[in-house]
Structure formats: structure tokens, C-alpha cells
Image (cartoon, rainbow, N blue to C red; front, top):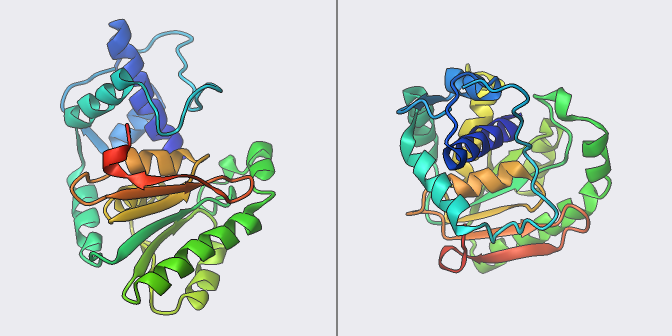
Amino acid sequence: MTCNMISRVFQNMIYCRNNGIRHNNRGYESALERQILNYVDKPVSMRNNFVIKTFYNKDFKYFDSTKAFLEDIEYFKRKIILKPFIVNEVNRFKSKFDENTVSVHIRTWHSTTNRVTNDKAAERRSVNKNVVFEKIYKLMDEHIVKNPNVNFFVAIDDFSYKEKIKERYINVIFYVPNSRFTNVQNDFIELLLLGRTSELIGNAASTFTIWAWRLRDHSVSKKVTVLSHINGEISYSGDVSNLKI
């Protein structure tokens, strides 16, 4: 749910800015504000039948957004501040990271913490998850061969895989532990941490990966690699300097 909430918050804000609309109570947005965000300016007023979908049109290119859209994202990133406990938790946990840490976001399309998203569409997307797993493992193995000091921060929606992955990569895997925070807050902390390492490996069809990259720390994140959920093949891999997002 977190990625959809984040998508709605930013896309609604962007839509309203571009159309001169003001609104102040929007469901997902108010939930985000309550749990995660403190707005500097109230950017968004209730409007009947106002819905912005979290999915992009068929011509949308994952790493080729329009300049205006990207400028709007940066604008609203500057207009909001996170609740202090979110910032503190991210800073506390990222102290475990070093220059050898690679973030890995694995989307199985089956959520342990938000079962409402385990719908038919997610079920269809998960058909080839084992193929995708093997491709992710291959990338991780290649990192280990190139750099014996590499370690991986992993965020995964299905917690039943955590121990299996940890057993495969003994002593080089770590996760955000369960905490006193809500599921949405924990998910958002994970999302921010994914963008606090030198490289992010994720899923091209996942909005969680998209927003982890968009909200990344530009001074740290240098490279993103995204895989297709259909066959696990690399959809894009590149450095920040080569990206328009």
C-alpha cells in the first residue's frame, strides 16, 4: 500500500499544481500525512470524482519521464518534510551501510503486511517469480565475485522468503527488523533505505522500486538496475548521470 499511497500523493499534488487546483483532504494523502509526512505547504481540496491512477499509460517509459514531471517531483520533495521519527530511524539504520552495500528490492506480488494487494492482478504478475528470483540471485552472485566485501540490504514483500535468502547468502544479508511502527511506516522506511546505497536492484513493474529511486539520496545512489517481472531480464541498468529520473 505504501507505494500506491506515495504515488497518489505525488501524482495528485503534481496534477493539482499543473491545473491550479487546491485541495486539503484526500484519503490516501491524509493517511500519509498522518503517518509519515509533515507538509510545509498544504498543496492539495476535496474535489468530487477526482481520482489519479497510480499506474502509467502504455506509452510511459520507466526511466524517461517528461522534464516537467520530474521538475514537479523535485518541487514537491522540497515542499514536504518527513516526521522526525522516520528520519531518525532511516539515519539509525543506514549507519549499517558502507560503500559496499547494494540494495535489493524483491517484489513477489504477495504481501505479508498488506493482504488487500494480493489480488488477481498480483497473482498474474507472480507467475514467473521463481524465474525472477534466479535472475536476482545471479546478479547478487556476480557482485560477490567482483567484490568479496559486498553486502546486501534486502526489502521483500513476502516475509516467508527472508530466512531462505539469508541462508543462501550467509552473513551478507540484512533486513529492517520488525519495529513498533505501523506497516506503512515500516514500508516507507524500507523504501527510503533502498535509495541510500550505492546501487539499487529492483523490479521494473513495481511502483515501490520507482519511488525508492525517485526519493533516493542523490549524493549516495549511483546506479539502478531493474528487472522484468515477466522473465527476469534486465530492463534497464545505468548510472545516475545517464538517467532522466
